Length: 442
Ligand SMILES: O=P(O)(O)OC[C@H]1O[C@](O)(CO)[C@@H](O)[C@@H]1O
Image 1 (cartoon, protein in one colour):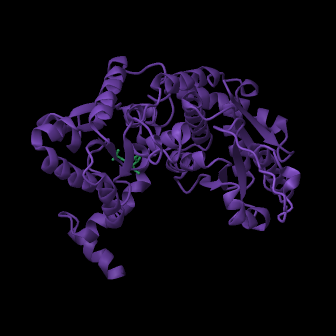
Image 2 (cartoon, protein in one colour):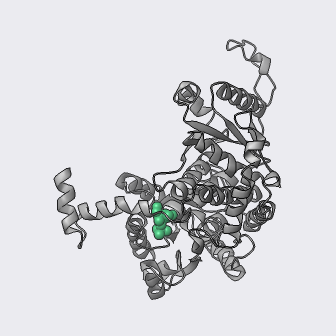
Image 3 (cartoon, helix red, strand yellow):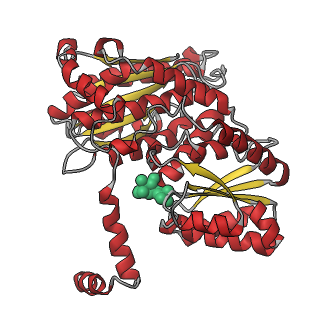
């Protein structure tokens, strides 16, 4: 499997890492034997081999129907009900997926913010093209997707009539409970299940991520194979043999040294949204009890010209994890220029990826010289197989890392605070006292 991991420099000695063997082993067995905190949300551990095959086929059939009758697929969801599919398309296809000539529908993601301007822009881009909707919400009551669903459901019904609209709505939600599930049963929408034991941020390999991927023509079998191979590879409790556990252990050691921020850096714009997915996975899993590494993402070399200064010379409170892709999706060379006014002819006819690789190596050494530890995850390429594998690598790593930190990595109670305030300020019935108290503070 084409993923490798290494610690660069000597910020931490190998022996210090391996000294965590017993601790890591405890976390490993807590995950695999389901005896740790949040153990009712461990469905993702065996998901790559233990998933509903009948539903998997149904996803492919639904995707084929969407491809046949829709020029656009509107995907509605937020957080884990959105970021996995978004990053899969960018990673496996391209961030220019919608602009590319293709025989699969354009895909637009809505319901991941509360901006009327964003919604209006998507409506304008959609125009009068034929479309379908995939609404994704485990709870069915999340404000952002619920508002968007109202809008696109009404648009579908106006355009096609209620019966035909119902055939164009695909809902990915809880098996039995929730507002969305109730609506699906009543209206006859085709539904796909977010398993009870898989939380939102761990749901990319469920129908949450798989239906939009399939609609875009991604080979789902390759995604699942990558994840299954990663599951196998990272199931060894021996820290010396397990790259994923070494990554988790190193994060823990850096955290103990006061490195409270992790920058996930990449050198491919196809990985920008992977950084967004990573941020949710780690922030919701570890940021609790006033503990946890704060995850941020950076896109190099772009951001070397913005936050690069801070990384080199600012506070020393972070470490970097660099995602490096060995083989780019396509190649190009630096052209020769007879004038050579920019002095770049020494690079003429050289691969642009070669230049990128030297930017990566040079940056890593500069940042390490500046006191920033570097971890490197090397990926052979960006395809469906490696996407599945990389997703599993990070999911397993955050499980171990969260247990090392002694938090429940599988809940997210803190997310409720803003929702309660928002509902109170919006005047939701039942929140009257809170509304008065909050308004007095504004
Ligand atoms: O699928 P739902 O229930 O709409 O929730 C969306 C997201 O909201 C959260 O519950 C809180 O951010 C996430 O964990 C989840 O991914």
